Length: 199
Length: 199
Image 1: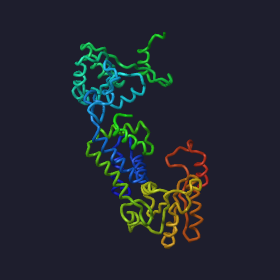
Image 2: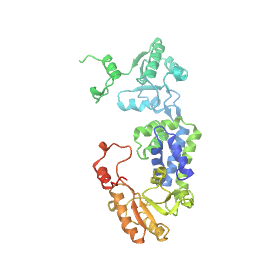
Image 3: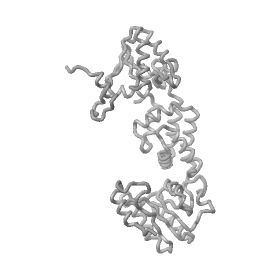
Image 4: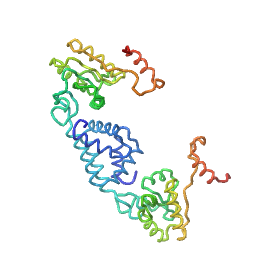
């Protein structure tokens, strides 16, 4: 029992968020009490409206408030190159690189027999429908570099290659700015595997 | 620009909270989207209600939803011993020790000439009114062990001692379970100053 039922309820609400433990929750509660009442109401409204308004793009399953997302609506994006990611949050990471001008497709997860996630639990049937239209010539698989992400990548490659689409996987290796000394053995293994001739 | 205006507004709202950077804000936004709509509405309500309902105890300035806080209302608490803290969040820390059965007074800050906080900006006039009633025999100053907390403690000691109240300061020294090797020099200095004879 903290100070009052209302404070306990707010602390519990904060604790439900990922990465927020009891101490951080308490710190946030006290911060909220110090805010203008209007700012707190704005925050509450932002919560409810984000949850209510945001849905998935009918085309790529990215998040949007419209029928289709801003990337799918953008005529300057190259519809012949499709980047497949696990989650909507992966898209801004790739966008920030400035290196990709194609479109995306969001799987909303990775294959995991352990957790009962097969192709139908992801958006893979929708992806195959999109590819069947024939517009996509190259698919870049940008699932996570871990067991589930790799398994998903292999499954997609096997399934999509017969459709005549060029299937690529993003490169793995040492992170730029990183120190070779601190690279773990798997990253080092991948970095050696993906070595390129210097020209 | 993230995915949609509603998501941006929520990310910005999260970023206003202390200790929440852009990456954490984004993670929280995606988590909110995965929650039940009802749970999000509960969270929004908890925010607004905590801010609206919670006020300061007229007696000790702790946080409460009533006229007086649960500690001041508790007849088993010893009204002759008063523990003075900077913030309401300090109270649960002391309560958890199980070592204190008196009452509290919350200053809501520490003296800071640099930031223009004098005795009147804190609740010191209200503290003096409370002490003038004559019920408090001992005052334990539990302000933070830093420059501002110490200055506040000295100011309070000077001001309150003439009222015939025994003025104490909580003990400082090595934290229990800590390693002497890692103690900083100021903590070590305080630990030596507050040495006690072993009996």
